[in-house]
Length: 378
Ligand SMILES: *Cc1c(COP(=O)(O)O)cnc(C)c1O
Image (cartoon, rainbow, N blue to C red; front, side):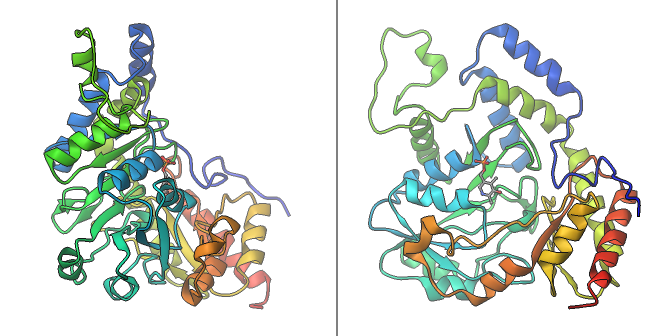
């Protein structure tokens, strides 16, 4: 049998460049300003404008955004952070980075996201924060838990690494009042090459985040350039966003309306093609409101066999994510999470990026249908 390997469908995820990124990057290279610069300031301002928020704080990665946000929220040793096990390991490592411990909770198999009852059940006197993950780009609604969280002084920090541009009701994710963290890594909805961003809740929290990302230095980088000294007034990391990365992000942001439309169209094409396929459950990203980051399905029988068959046929499938509570590094915080473990055995992500065409989605779905029947439904 011959297999046509299509360039698009062969990759699970890939960055998509519009062309203007190279020019923007070359201009910053020529300028010699590679640290946080006015280009970074401009990127922060334009993202704030798109989201409809007062200010944003750019950092070196999504993981750094979570790390800084947790520190800014006062989460540290002795504290517990309620978090889904079903996420990228970066979410959990950020919790460990501040000396806190993860309290793993189940997610809904329909959405891959945590819901209020599980969050409320997991609260203990040590809980200091809840860290929902916006799986696939879907906004997480914790409004039923919010009054209790507020009463107990528990902060919500959103891992919105998948959800740049998505909406929660009429507002964009980031503009809902939660402390929100985005990633602009290579394969995220918007890429800076590498990068991340925090949407702080108050001007004071924004200031704290800026000091934490810049070695604890109180003055802004622009101000410092004209001064004879500076003040280090607290702990700080070195996780600022380089102007090189910000330039790439600015170019991507100009075309973000196209990104949004294309990602929604691809996800809808998959959803339509998968409607009549038995043994497959599509994870619902709430496409009308979201800018999808993944097209994830649960393969109800023989996921591993289906996965390998598709790989052999040149289809770039993935498994986002193997659960974290069963990872050796996080064994200390293991809990019995049967739903998450089942999702871990069933989850498979289909090729999803902007190099794909709707014809590619049909090809992938046809291959999936064949892979499912080839095993005789074992
Ligand atoms: C990508 C990602 C991160 C980390 O972002 P980086 O920019 O890669 O550091 C965190 N959480 C989730 C769910 C992610 O997908």
